[in-house]
Length: 351
Ligand SMILES: Nc1nc2c(ncn2[C@@H]2O[C@H](COP(=O)(O)OP(=O)(O)O)[C@@H](O)[C@H]2O)c(=O)[nH]1
Ligand SMILES: [Mg+2]
Image (cartoon, rainbow, N blue to C red; front, side, top):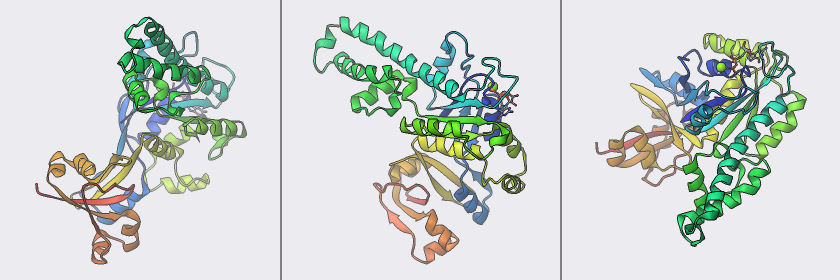
C-alpha cells in the first residue's frame, strides 16, 4: 500500500517521514513498520529467528505545493494519483525556513491544499461532462457514457461545495468510475498537524474544531511534533518509553498516525507465530480465511484445508499458543471464516 506525503514545503513532511521510518529511511521511499503492541508481545514470547512486521510504503517528496500560483504541478498530480492514501502534513509551528507564508496559519494551509485537491477533481468532472454533453451514446440509457454522465452529474454539486469524493456515498457504478479516474479527493486522507514543541501531546484549541470537521469529512486528523518524533525514533527502543513518559506521553504520535493510515486503508492485521518467522500480515477488512492463506502463499490457499484460529486476546490470556491449544481455545475454521483483526492463524493445507 502506497502512502504519499503531501503538504506545503517546509511543513515537516521529510521530518515526519524519517521519524515514521524509525531509522530505516533510505531515499524517498521506505517500507514503514506499522506499530503494533500486540505484535511486539507475540515476538517477545515466541522469540522467533525472523521478525516481519506489517508495513506500508511511505513516499516522501511527491513534489507538492510550493504556495504560489497554481499549487500542484503536473508531476505532483501524476505521482499522487498512484498513491493509495495521501498523508497531509500541515505546519503549525513558527519557522524561518517556511518561505511561502511568513505567518503561521494551519487552518488556511490545510484548507488551501484540501480545496486544491477537490478542484483538481472538479476540473476533470467538468471537462468530461462537457464532452459527454455532445456525445450521442451518452443519451443511450445503459451505455457506459450514459452511466458515467449520471455519476459525474452527482459528483459535481458536492465537489463545488468543497466536499471530497471520499466523503460521498457512491453506488457501485460511482465507485468503479472514480477508481478508474484515480480522483485525488476519492483517496483516503489522513491529516497530521505539525505543532510546535510547546504543544507536545496536546491539541491546540485553534485546531480542535477543524479536527472535528475533518473527521466529519472522512478524514482522520492528528497533531504531531515532527522533530520530537525524529528524536524519539533515533533512541534505542529500550530508551523510548522513559523519554516519552518524561514528556507525559505513552507512545510517539507518529505511531498513532501510521496506525490511522493503516486503518484508513481498510486494513486489519493477522499474525503467524512461528519459531522460524513471526509475522504480522496486512489484510483487507472483511477478507475470509482463503484470502488470508493466499496472502501468505498462493499454494497455501490452493491446498487450504482448515484455519486454526486463536484470537490475540485469548492468546494473551493463556500466555502462549501451546497453552491456548491445550485449553481447547483453538477454533477450526473453514474457507469462508471472516478473519478478525488480531487473529493468530495456522493454515492446515495439502501443500
Ligand atoms: N520548530 C519546528 N521545526 C520543525 C518542525 N517540523 C519541521 N521543522 C523544521 O522545518 C524544516 C523543514 O522541515 P522538512 O521536514 O524538511 O519539511 P518538508 O519540506 O515538508 O519536507 C526543517 O528544518 C525541520 O527541522 C516542528 O514541528 N517544529
Ligand atoms: Mg521534504
